[in-house]
Length: 102
Image 1: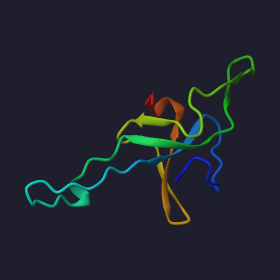
Image 2: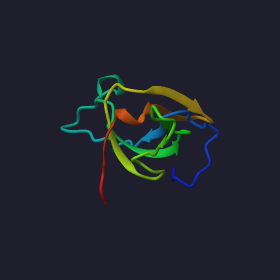
Image 3: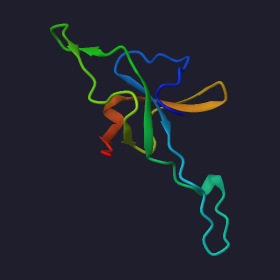
């Protein structure tokens, strides 16, 4: 899915909608690893940004990420959301550990 695709979810506040980038499945030595034993991917694409948050004086605080960025996230943060058969994750911007530079 590219960042230009429209999604029917608009995050609120400092939340960011991301989609994990799945690595291709590899079978090593003929051993199949079931989905339940695999680690969650940590690399994701930013799909949508929330409405933003405000500081103590009421000034808007901008996001450090933008739609289309590839980011690293914590393994177990966020809330899983399914929309039109696709699985996304809603995370706070603080749960994003870094931006992957191209």
